[in-house]
Amino acid sequence: MIDIRAVRPDPGVARAALARRGDEAALAQFDRAMELDARRLAVLAEVEQLRAERNEASRVFGQRKQAGEDVGGLQQELGERAATLKSLEEDLREFEALCESHLLAVPNFPHRAAPDGDASANRVVRTWGTPRSFDTPPRPHWELGEALGLFDLARGTKVAGSGFPLFTGPGARLVRGLANFMLDLHTTEHGYTEVQPPLLVNEASARGTGQLPKFQDDLYMAERDALYLLPTSEVPVTNIYRDEILDAAALPIAMTAYTPCFRREAGSHGKDTRGLIRVHQFDKVELVRICRPEDSEAQHALITAQAETVLQRLELPYRVLELAAGDTGFASAHTYDLELWAPGLDTWLEASSASTFTDFQARRANIRYRPTPGAKPEFVHTLNASGVAFPRTIIAILENGQEADGSVRLPAALVPYVGTDRLVPAA
RNA sequence: GGCGCGGUGGCAGAGCGGUUGAAUGCACCGGUCUUGAAAACCGGCGGGCCCGUGAGGGUCUCGUGAGUUCGAAUCUCACCCGCGCCGCCA
Image (cartoon, rainbow, N blue to C red):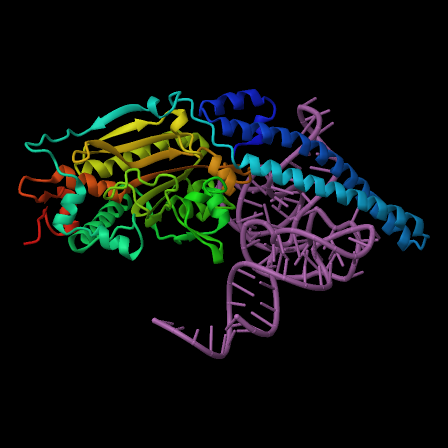
């Protein structure tokens, strides 16, 4: 959530910043929120005035009554005034709720470094690794995976529906190996604390990180219990500290979690649905950092580098994209996408998104810290990065590692975790 | 799922419907003392919002929401959460 108090003195500046997203609807939400805020403040002043009078009058009333004076007339007058106040308070609540609902729909301000424009303005800031050349056209991962017995997408569809992959035998082992490899890297070399969060989250949590109210359609919901299946472990992990005031000495906090993620992918049916490119359920190791505001830019560079390390250890060619203002996610101010090269698909696939949310999530989730002991609490900054998402990593491993004989060579870093250096077709 | 008890400030823990934003202790901050530290003593010390350049003033906040009342942390109702016992299940 943006800071409406900071915006109030000069809404034009904020409006210009938001305009960089090229999102007319967002600007409209912003304008409406500012409008409602002004009306809210006018009613608030009136309500507070009446409450002050009421409080004072009640004090006097109590004194007179105790002194044994006749208070009948005064009591009636105060009763009438209480009714006036009550109706005004209802107006106030209405404006507050309306104002907040619009404010919750306003995205974060893009970082000054983010390029202007939409996705076509995304900037490649670096590439790593060199794509192999193939003598014959490289095969897509779904052919390789089925031939190697790694997954059985038809049966996954039978069990749940399309987009719910079933990993089998060596494929399941590969998934488990990836999880252990990534968790070990982040916990032992990058200093993260491993957590296993709840996989369903309540509404407050989903609002805290920005999934609600705007992206309700993207979430699976357990309606009876008003719980949502996590679309990313960013949600439960960031919300661990919701409504808390953190000790400055504890910052930065660095947590990693291995969880499945569930996404309805509403509106993207028929797009990239082949194989493992876009699925409703997938595993991911996530990195979350919580830090002091002045540290967040450096923390962003750090968390991005840590996600890159995963891909480097897996010897997978990738590029780093700095997202343009218009392509940056709702809650994010600045995002780097890590895209893996998939030779079988002849394309780049996003395997990680490393974002700084500045105080946007902290404000929604009310996560603060005391800069010094005894000082006023301030909002922290939150960041996260996939470190990394599994399906597209598996795609890259298969498509980059494929050999002419139909086998797939595994990266050395994975060998101890998967128990073999090569995946071979079943005899 | 049933019955019982309970949710108060960073923590612990008081609180006859009327200066109770809330006793007290701990923690924390500032100071005195000390060569230094500890102890002791003195003072300060929740958060949000609005107005104000500032000093400061106002308002809300005792799980959440509604209600009773001139006035609610205190009374009523609903909901949420926690604990205990029973039932059910692993």
